[in-house]
Structure formats: structure tokens, C-alpha cells
Image (cartoon, rainbow, N blue to C red; front, side, top):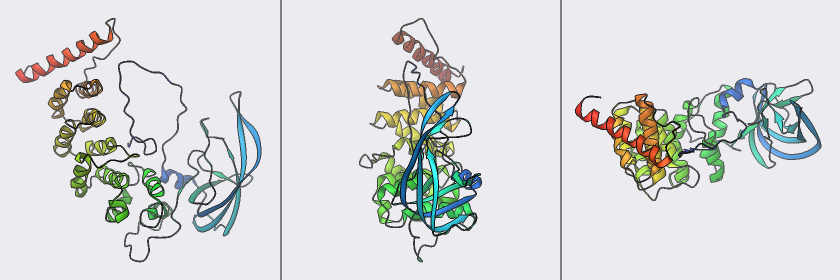
Length: 352
């Protein structure tokens, strides 16, 4: 599974453990939204007006509630009974999902969206309080664009989202479209993404280019491997929104004979966060070939890289030596390093 395109990759390493209270947020599933919706409409949100306030109670806790009315100009009804061109509906935020998590999803005026609604006793409600809608292009890619994904509701929604890549949308809208894709479900977008890589606006934007290449690699499209290598090892190819760690993660999903040499090269990167990603994701190759490479990473000057290497070594060998200890942190660290040095020596002598 992708480490969320909205939060992107966050690799948290360290000696101590920090406990934090957080409310869980489900990942975005376009397929899930389509399946659960009674009505899916695409068009421009023309007006959003607050109509009231109130509260919602859950397990004895009161949450503030804001009520809104939205007016949309509907270009297309993708699923359900055809909606009028001028469509008005009400919603509230925060909303509570079926397991009691509180979300604040809503709509913004003057945006094009695909909106997912379900029937209620009084009208309609969002299918998901977290993802009430996704971005939509205001027009199609045009008659010369040959990639069409399909006529079922799911692929029509996906086409609306991806059309942002080949139309005059903003870079931010294009990024949002890519970040809404799900590695585990949306591989049917691959032909569209391969075509989009040839578009000048995509070629010149590292965020878009690296994101698309990551998607295609995760879907085992090796035709983009040269582009992945170019972006991965070109220091000038940088994105403020999409870390190369996601590209490293996608590479780790390939066959070991392809992924391991590339991840070994990333372990020599001058950027510590990229070396951390390589050490952490070498585990995902599920290959014993990765052990010697991870053992060499114990010499890395950055402790986070060393720690990531020890994590991967432990998971690949089912030996977990990072545990509570009466030793001070530095001494405990040295004990763990020494354990893996002994493991390395045993591998070299053939006793492991």
C-alpha cells in the first residue's frame, strides 16, 4: 500500500518512542466511493452557504456542527437518477462516520468536483465525511486524446479525475488528481498516465513526473525504469510536495533482481532521508540478497540510516534486538550494532 499520497511518505525513526493521540482517517478509495454512492455528479460547485449551526453528540461528547447548502451546476450524472443541471443539496460538518471518527470534509465554491452522495430519509448525504468529492476536469482532453478508460461509473469517475492532467488545469489541481490515486486499486489508470508523461506540462514538473513514474513502477511497468533512475539520482530533480522516498518505495515492489541493485545505489545517496528510505524499504524485497547490503549500511554516518537498516535486518531474519534495556541509549545502540556485526561475521564464515 502506498504511504498515503496526501500525507506522502513519513518515515519516523529514533531511539525513543513518542506516544500521540490521533484520530484515524481511512485511506481514499475511489472504487469504494463509487460502489457506495447512490448518486454521483460532476460539475462546478457554484455556491456554498452556511445555513445554521448546532452540535452532534457521540459517546457523551458534544462536537460543534456547521450546516451548509451547496449549489452545483451539474455537467454529468455518472451514477443514479439524472440530476438537474442546477442541483442544490445540504450537508453538515463535522460529520461522524460509522465508527465514530469525526471529519470535516466539505465543498469549496468555484471548484469542479465529482461528488459522491447517498440517499437518506430527508435527501442526500456524503458517502464519506472524509472524502465527499474528488477533483474533476471541467472539460475532456479533446478528440486527439486516444486513451479512454471505460464506460462504467468507476472508470468514468477516474477519467474525470485524470483529464486534469491533459487540460489547462493548474499544477496544484494536477497534483491533487495524482495524489488521489490508490496504488492498490487504480492500476487501470496506467495507460492514461503513460500517455500523460509525454505532455510538456508533466515532463517539466518534477512532482507530476515522479508521482506518475512511481505509480507505473508500482504497477510493474518497467518501461519507465530509465526515467525513475534519472529522477532518483539527478540532484536537480526535486519536488517540494512529493519526496523521492515514494519513488524508492515503488522500486522496492519490483522483482529483487531489479529493485535491490537500485536500492543499493540509493544507499550511497548524499541525502540522508533517501538512504533511510532505501534501508527501510529493502525489507520489502523479501530477499536474502538484501542482507549484505543492509549490513553495509551499519557503517552509515547517520544513525537513522543505521536504525532503518537494523529494522529491516530484524524483519528479514526474524531477529529483533531493539528492546527495552537497563543500558543507557548509547550502550544499548552499541550492543545492537555488535549483534549485527556478529551476524555479518557468521555469514562470511558460512556459520549463519
